[in-house]
Image (cartoon, rainbow, N blue to C red; front, side):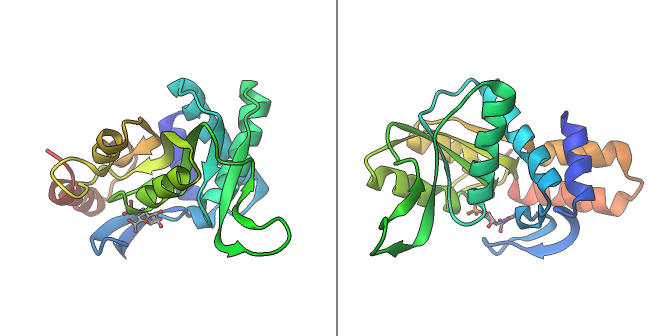
Length: 212
Ligand code: OMP
């Protein structure tokens, strides 16, 4: 699926919405990507295929695919299926519980133990807060982060003047890959949409919160 087809897909699924939204960071955004709204098997299959293609194209080496709770759980599960079926890459996967269990199997990690090089799969990076939490989980299990793959890179400034993704790459020495980024959405809207107000607010947002 190329980028334009992926953007059509997420708009039709109601996952990418245009309007007015307040983000976790407090920023007011003219668009929002809600991965929780992928809610059919067919949609998950298409989404997983897009993540798997991005991982395969990146060539990143890893031992375990890790999806942080909650939204990362179906992403890790379905993407590992797509990697095995479509890309002959049968990799272990894992996710965490938010609450530790003190009986039965115990612990916070479900699936394969977090060991070796761990590729994180998540929905969106804005300011990088959620991704840093995943890094801590991986390190606390004695494993190493190998990289991050997200559906959408919002291309926003992180804690300093660089983008959140550049900061994560520099701080942890790992690559970050995305299926699409904000520029892809703006390019798509430039070609498809005749609503110049939306396009203008997207560009304003990029000018305010993006990097130079
Ligand atoms: P950071 O932790 O700032 O990188 O923001 C990423 C998280 O914000 C995601 O994991 C979501 O919980 C949420 N989010 C979205 O899901 N979609 C968006 O378009 C924007 C955000 C957000 O609040 O920044």
